[in-house]
Image 1 (cartoon, rainbow, N blue to C red):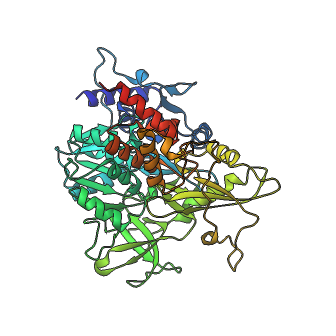
Image 2 (image 1 turned 90 degrees about the vertical axis):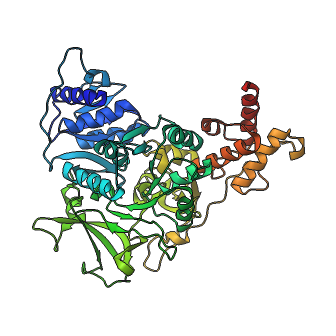
Image 3 (image 1 turned 90 degrees about the horizontal axis):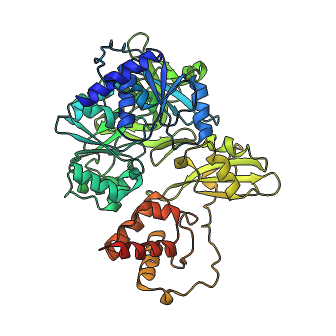
Length: 547
């Protein structure tokens, strides 16, 4: 009742400021109750919400606001006209709860900006009808009930957040909000899951690895695990099947509204992970280069039609027309979205995902256009050519940037700063490689598969003590560092992230320190002081604070 009261007043307040059908409201709030109220209030006002993650670079946020023609924004840090704070929309004493008309199904519910191959992100406009269809279908397929407790783990800038925030509220369940900053802390998430009795968790494969490294097992309350956002490897599916009560693989691009297919069980009897079957009111076509259906077992491109198809790309009619095509097999006026995903139908009609037909990749759940990375790199005056590729084994994949300099080679720090000014941290390259020239395919294109693996960045330590001079804590931390990074000659002062480490590496190290030394090291320590020596110092300090 309290949430409904706040949402109704937020919606009425937004209406007073001019929000309504056909308008966009930017939501520049961190995770938390204020963000949830802003989303629900915007929807109730009949407007569409546009996520503006405060953690994103200012340049990217400024572009999105300008490109979308944003007039209103809800933020904790107002900067000018059109900026509102949650307090501006809060209930006022003695003010009755207003009644507002329901939005029309065809009106936009949200606009989400995704990576663009030209170097500029593009906004996908999703109507209320598409959002309602996916939520209703998921509720039916999952058997949702008022006993469900969903973990709101995902950033609002990732469309799957709508499932975590809205599905439980439409079925009488509870939303468990993850505090800002805790989303990358596996042990903290696991403690929250156990304390709140969370029953449903949705995450990318990378997010699930974070929880597994933190000690997720069947002793916890999680009974339904949804995995999506990137391909689910069979070994990880097997681990999750053993660690949770129910594992479901979901698939869908932003342009067809969150999820389009669902596979349960995620693993087939043959040990393969399939995309499963379509959600309600969803049509799937596997077509060849001539846009005609291909036989079972033959690779084709996946086209998705039905109620989940978005309106298109905001303000980009030409791009919309090239990706959203008339559906020859659907009702008059219906369209299909050309996904660019390669699949083939197997026995029983299930779909097997085989990869992309273009230069788009997914890494830790984030959709990355390699062309966007490359287009931004060549803006540096010292870069003549640029290429990007994903390298590494499953579970430890990272984005690598390759450049051919026009003269003196730019430093990795300069390239990282260039990209970091406009791209979210999650899609920044993990390494930069300078080459004299790029390998080419016979038809003259960059041969991404032939681009070399980067050499680990190693520092030359100055007069470091040998292992035997370290105290027991320092020696134990250094041993864990070497195990996780698989570098036997790693020294105590080498930077974790220079050696290819990332958030999953940090979680693995933290979990082993807790197991062997009995000390819980906050993950921020690793990001602030990313050397084995500094973390060992932190372990000693934390031990001294313990009673």
